[in-house]
Image (cartoon, rainbow over all chains, first blue to last red; front, top):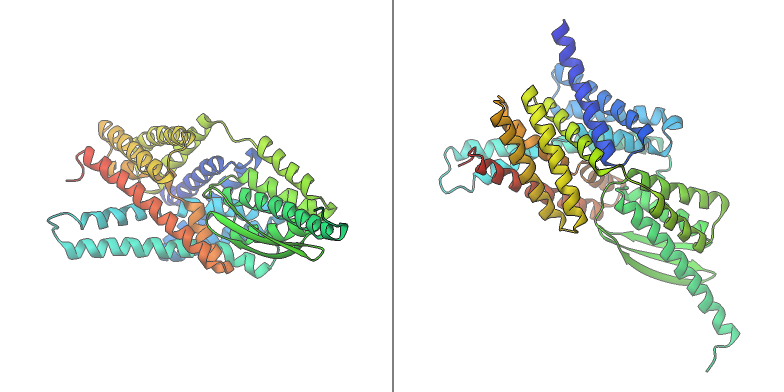
Length: 155
Length: 266
């Protein structure tokens, strides 16, 4: 029971920490950093729930980005015009940077003079590239959908 | 030969239109350099021009340049400006947007608008570099935990990413090329992360190699690229996507060299 809860909340904790750290780098005001942390924690919590439920990484990332963007829209009075940026900052921990690096490293490996199991290496690199592409698409779409449905001004 | 008064009126209107165009483009450039989406910048340009008493003729936004057409009592002026490659600065972006909204509400001439932009540029501070380096170190260490790293990797990534972010700050101040900085910072961060993790006996050295470079992943431009395409600006969105891809290629080159130096790649 405790281990299951830890599996669910540890990603939320580290997601919040990563979002707050990147919020600091992006020069958010101190009072907005807590919102960044909350957005990151919420995004990772929803994504973890999705993954635990057997969804793909892309599907879970889409649900997480959509949830954070909807929440930011509901808190518009409180967050002001920063709502979208805070939601975006919360989704930064879900950007699959490590997969992207792995994919490019995999492609580099294919240029070696003697490649063992070239078919396997191509397949692994291609899987990583597709995963990066679709996950980024899922995050971007999840973030932008509520804004277009509400049809408010962006400024 | 002196201009007659009837000649000087259109010339004066053109000069006013030009002042409005330049002020609007300065604000738009500050927004782009702060990481705003294309839709926000387009809205800003239109609001700013109208608030300053001009007629909005049109606006084109590129990756590092823009054009605007502004009218003033029948006289049209088209201007172009270049700006630096997009970064991320939330406080700056919020201040510029607030200035445009204030101008829309109360009206503002081009000179006052330009002074407002000067004030924002001068007064908008950034967090202290050392604190930023520590925050980024913590963020990358948190990433390492999300990637199933162990406690030793957490500590190694924290130290390596903090030093890598500090190096990035120093290299930026020297005005070095963005992609060269990316490769050098990735090399330093990756090497230090892998080295610390190896020395401390981590079971997830591969994570310690990649996680310190996650500070270089252009997450905001990557999502902006897609948002811009969805919003109807595919040219700018595609340019942003290509820039993101190039940053990742340079970052991965740094990781690859570091793993070679640590004997993890043959």
